[in-house]
Length: 223
Image (cartoon, rainbow, N blue to C red; front, top):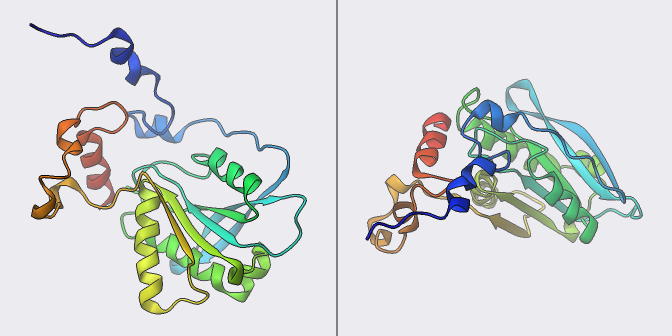
C-alpha cells in the first residue's frame, strides 16, 4: 500500500530559517538580531596572516569588570554561509548565563576564500587571543579558562585548531572544547570499519535542513 507524507512534513522545507535555504545569497542575506540588555556587545578587528583582519564580536556582562575566562566561538554554515549574526542568540545566552567573555569569529567564507583560509583565520585569532595584547583588549585571563567551541563547520574548526594548538605547544593552553552538531568527516571518506555504524547520511539523505546534496555542495564549494 502506498504511503503519503503528512502535509505539514511536506511543507516543512518551505518554512526553514536562514542558514538552511537553498540559495547562498538568500542564506547570507538575513536581518540582524537586536542585542539584548545586560551585555556590552562590540566588535574589534584582529590581524591575521596575508595582511588581512578578522572581525570579532565580543559579548560581556555589563555588571562584571573582572578579567574573565574566554569562550572563543566559531559559527556554522557549511564553510560558505553564516557570520556574526548566525549564532548571535547563542553567544548572548552564553555570556548572560556564564561568567565568561564570548568572542565570535567572523572567519572568511568559501567560495571566495577556499579552505584552509577560514581555518587559518580562526587559528590566527586563537593565537592572538593567547597573547598579552589579546588578553588585554578582551579583558580576559586565560589562566581561569580558555574554551573553544562552534557549531557544524565551526565545530570542525574547533577540533582541528585544538589539535594544532596542542601540537605547537600553544600557551596558555586550551582548557575545553565544545562541539555542537559537528561535521568531522565527509561521507565519501568514512573509514571502512565504521561504514556499518554511520548510516544516517545514507538513510535520511534527503531530510529537510541538511541533505546529502547540500553536504556535497558545501564540500565542493569549500575545497
